[in-house]
Length: 346
Image 1 (cartoon, helix red, strand yellow):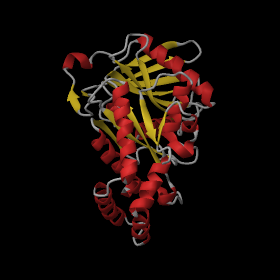
Image 2 (cartoon, helix red, strand yellow):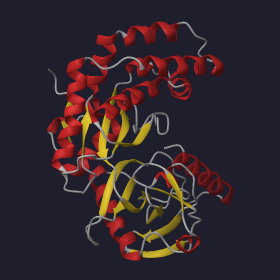
Image 3 (spheres, helix red, strand yellow):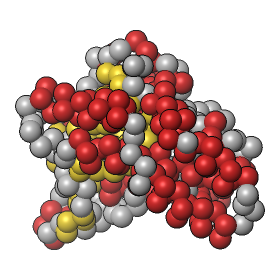
Image 4 (cartoon, helix red, strand yellow):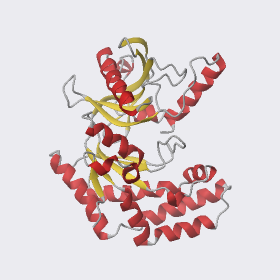
């Protein structure tokens, strides 16, 4: 049996072809001693094994060859079929057992019998310099048993053939079946606050600034565009917060992955304090140095951990869209719009 599951600490987890974009970023951080939410990776050979052993790969090839690639209606019809195919085609028994054992082992290690995890797509075409499939593939939050994890791994694989993902792949001359998908399984952080951090201003391209956007609860509200997050700007060299803008955080996502209303009083409270923003900026600068380029980082503040040790990272990847700091006001406005669309599509 192949190594279908990998820990973040294994050397092979540093191979993007084995673990995809998200998995690679998490392995880099974990092996550098940067705290990440605990979990494991279902490697790309598992995806290929499933497609080959179930005949799904050939079925998909025949279906894709037979449709009008430029027709959204045709792609949407295929998406509906594909979702049903994956839902009703379980993994081969050895692979299924490996996935369930991976979840059970993580649950035992954390001493949490009903561990809530996120099931996150991590494709080999994600987070590269040439293409960004951000937002094209699915993530599911709140799975609490091995069977549910196995089902949602299949649903992540199916999302490579959604109407939107197919359209993007074909537009960029990418064969969807050549994109191998790993899956990251991670403990859902009991987040007091969470969000995204850019180690460059995404609206002006100013590399002397770190921009943090945060909300109460899980960061789904920020990356999904459901709330207007709090915004912090940190001067990279001085290490000081130089700007804060209070957002409208009317919703927060809990560990169950569901949105809950935020009472009026808490909407007026910043989700992060200055010391947390500064601590985040230090981690961001370290990652930028490690990877040699500005980074787009997802983080959470874990309410179960003591202050000072409660920052947990969930993802890092190169920033793919920036605006030069010499840009005109119109270009800056367009850059801000682009950045907002990117954040909403993750």
